[in-house]
Picture 1: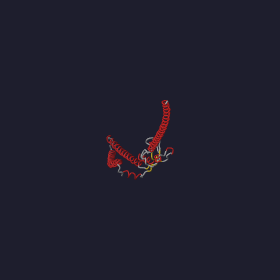
Picture 2: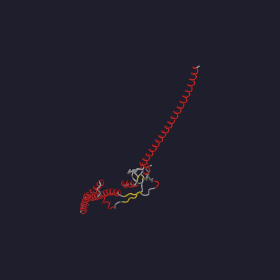
Picture 3: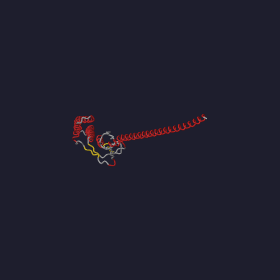
Picture 4: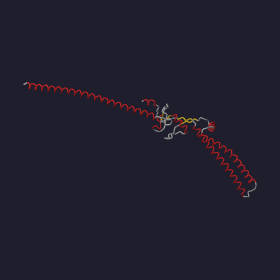
Length: 261
């Protein structure tokens, strides 16, 4: 009887113990599941935060790159000075960065190149040239320049002046000799002597050819030096562009605003 009671007690106690352990295991599992879910939520939040931060960094980098590109795009193609406060315009048919230019740089470039059109697209600008020197004074200034590129022209002028000092007396002397000889054969009755007549004609022809050659050489020399002087005179003129059409101008002077974006 006692054995039976003990067995029954053991069965009841074991069953209750098992039920209690099962309940405890279920509670522990629930706690573990809640902890795991919280950890997963935190990880998801951290990953989303990292993704948003990376996207924000990418956007910031792209904006900085665009701002740098935009600032580089509006640099003048002549001076390439990004710190200049002058307005950048597009006065010709050139597109993109090749068309960006400062008005002052363009006028200086046209002045130095002694031209009135764009060398890339061929657009002709309406310019007004104002000489810095008057004509007579410019000749004196041109002859007194000490620059190497002008010393060649000055030496040529001096050499041609020396040639003139030599050629003019020779031409006058030869012409005088030809005239005297022709007059000698003409005043003396050598009409019946054919060589005398041919000699007179030859002397007169030679004198005419000599004088013609002298004047042709003088003309070509003066023309050469006049072109060299006129080119320099025009090059030293101050150039101002007039009548820029509003449709051909695009102002790009917001460098500071673009760089601060």
